[in-house]
Image 1 (cartoon, one colour):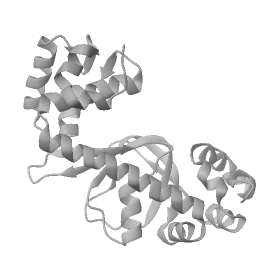
Image 2 (image 1 turned 30 degrees about the vertical axis):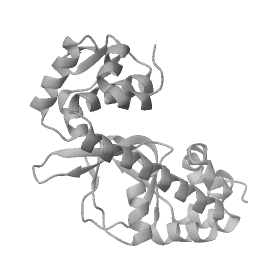
Image 3 (image 1 turned 90 degrees about the horizontal axis):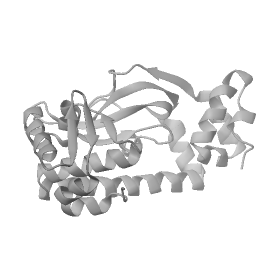
Length: 245
């Protein structure tokens, strides 16, 4: 095991190396040889919000470790509507990228930068070497793959077997829990993109949730009125969310 990225990298790279180690402690378990190679070949990545990080059918040549910002990964339908698959935030890596690198295939979805992205990227061949030569890193990657596949299976179940009002109620519950807030800065279009539906349809469902007493709508915002009312609508999907007051 190495002494860590920050001690192995050149002084000019230590600022990002320290931050990267805090968010990705698995990197400190690389061997000294792999750490030196990581420091030598890593490059900084800065992508502004609204830019496309990767697109469907584009080649996959590197893996990014973000330490600021967020990427939304979604699949476009022939109607140009997009369904959100997952988000990549600091401390996480894009499992679609991992899958493409391991399978040496092109991307099957699009990654859109939601918030200005800053991170460190390593080339495909170095990623393959980390997986091959470091058992801890390999286990970390496989664990991430497993958890993401489980989450995507849940998404397929929600889309196939649950009504739109149930899905929206569950999504709002999840957002309120994750943020710890009683008011969300989110538009009807944001939610429509997440569920892969038309904005007009989502607006009607949100108005129904408001009439049921679960939320209050304002321009660009959704406020929580009653978590219990949202859980009643979400039904079985609500059991996947943590308890709320």
